[in-house]
Length: 376
Image (cartoon, rainbow, N blue to C red; front, side, top):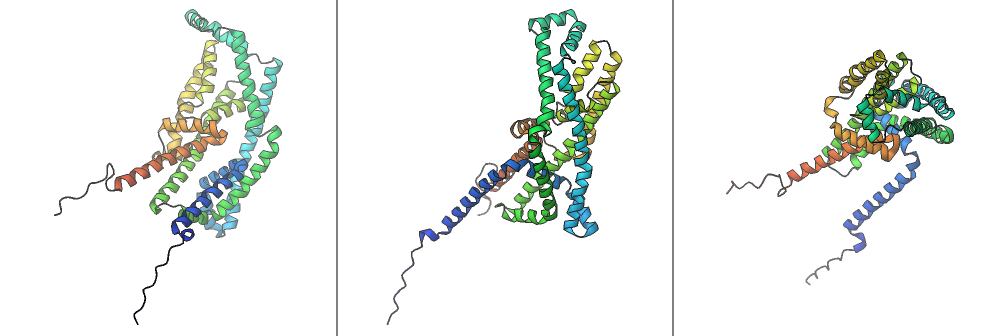
């Protein structure tokens, strides 16, 4: 008796591999976005824990070789970070807050009068310069002094209440600080395992994933280790110059110079430059010329000398891109943006480079090698 052919089974639409893969992908995207919203209020603490873990990872590796226990090595590295970074930063911040509060009170009480300094500068200018300023309405001392005083007041108040987490933000600052330390400990302890999980989970070719992760780590180290250290040194050198000249608020102006030093092509000259010009216009030639020489030859060259040593020349992006990314990052993410902005710019570049490589290797795409027609 002949066998009857088996009837082919109709595939079930709800068990389609394509549908299952798409459903899984949408679930991953949905819950990833939800998780980002959940940790959003603490994003700064988590990001800084990640940044510090990347920067101090070589130190953690040396600690692991000494104690051979990941948990103890992570604890030692964490304590080292607290002693090397956090304690000095807290002491400097306290001094800056104190001087910013004193400056704010002097401006409000009238003890510090910007109009007097502006009038001295205008009186020292040549007549033709004063006539040019008069055409543009820049010789109105009351208006200029009001603007200058308002700018100084807002800057001092910003440093006192918002930038350093004082006043109403104290509780949030303390909570974020301890969460950062807590996350930092586990990132140090389990960083290697987390890196392997990320490497396996990213849906890219292994060499592409490796290039993305390496670029991310490189830019974070370059930005934190290079930009922050250079900014702190430039701020300290600027504060030292102000201390030698006997100017008040040395820590405050040093902090301003350190913050402005985070911006390439702008730098601390926006602080020490006007002070040097004021010294020159008011007849203090020695102080003015000395400050200009110190600013150009010492403060200005710190970036060119130290940054290649701390960062390495191969990791630097174009200065114009760093400037745009840093300013845009600060405007969008606040103070954390001076790291986030360059990281996003670097990821933007490496993603486009990877896409270009894939297109060049795809047959028929522009720039790819054509088919070999010599055969046959």
